[in-house]
Amino acid sequence: HGCQLTPSGPLCYCPAGQQPNKTQCVDLNECEVDGSCDQLCTNNDGSFSCACVPGYVRFNSTRCKAINEPADEEPSLVFSSTMDIRRIYLNGTAWPGNSAISQLQTLALEFNHRNRTLCYIRNNGSLALFSCADIDNLLLTWELPPPTMFPLYTNTHVALDWISGNWYFLDDSREMIFVCTSTMKSCLILVDVNLSKPRGIALDPTKGFMFFTKWGVTSPKLERALLDGSERKTLVDHKIVYPYGVTVDYTTQHVYWVDTYLDFVERVDYDGSNRRTVRKGFPVQNLYDVTLLENNLFVTSWRNQSIIRLDKFNTESHDTVTNISRPFAIHVYHRQRQPDADHPCKKDNGGCQHICIPAWKKGIPQAQCLCQSGYRLLGSRKCIMAKQSSFLLYGKGRPGMIKGISMLPKRNKLEEEMIPITDLTRPTALDYDVRTQFIYYSDAQKYVIERQKMDGTQREMVIERGVSNCEG
Figure 1 (cartoon, rainbow, N blue to C red):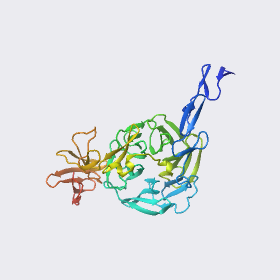
Figure 2: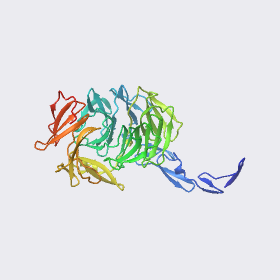
Figure 3: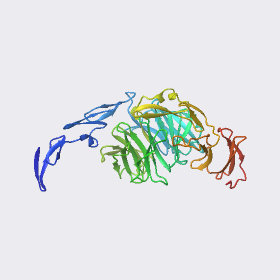
Figure 4: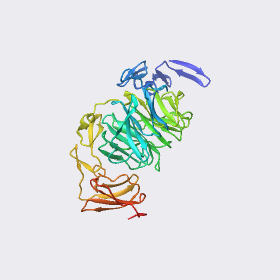
């Protein structure tokens, strides 16, 4: 096309949409340039075109804007801090009406746009309650039933699968992820192996994935798994130290996370490829959580006591949304942050008796039925109490519980054969009475001996005094 003399010799140049290849001009794939399009990009000979996913409209040649539902409701931020839970506009101004709840040190926070609620775990001394509030009047609150298996006082994150209505709880003390139905009547541990110090969780039920961060005794990682906890895959395990909050961009299938030690905001594709640093150093220091909408990332910074807005394509752009004392969890409250998808789990629990997990097989939605702990599937949907002539009974410290598992794995998984005994600290000894079906056990940290039946009923104190050290 043209030639320009330079101090190092002649240099070829090309028209817009092309690039030099030796002495020839060839097509430039603009779609490989980050930020050429907000969402969908199609490369054409000498040019490119952009499009938007459902739920968004294109408002210039490259940008996509989220459609408000209701049409007159702007997107807003909901976040927690050391003092309260609050709702504000994206520019930091106060949301009108009752837009704050006085709650101390609330870490776990999630919303359900379909029924316009904001839910959070409220610690009241030794008791933790799962509370919800009307998003239009945060002073109007109520309690959800507690999960059937586990107290919530050590849960630091909660995430909603808005397709099925299931709640995912991340317990950093017991080091596990468990799921409960919307009624909390059926719960099941999904991940409790190699999960040292889990720190953040995000879901994409429209693709069937969960993403979580951890940084304990094993190497720090960003991981992906299916919504039933299977098929775990490491996405990032190098140049990562203290990963905390994680969020998902459903429009581009990118996962974003913050590293509070490295002071990084980074992203990868769903398969772990194309890692990119969005921002590092000032002002993204000592970060806790991250959320997004359109091209805007919002992070909570403990160092700067603020919520900061970043442009996910422009590493230099940032501004402070609001100053707040030690902000924790944060979400953009908007319909497109919980995009719709046709799935059997949306109706009648997918036909499942206990838990319906949104699964996708080669892009086709399928209802995957699971049973709560101590039950097994009969066929593909019905659950019956597990009864085996022999199984392994054992206790574990993290999380503190006693479980019974099958001696032979099914589908490379050891199935649970009894309702586990939970809320233990350090179970050190146990025995089983075949005649009465009672399991007797000692807790070396609580200094007690208790018992519970195999079916999860009749938990009773046997000895609560004089048990200074029971190891057998």
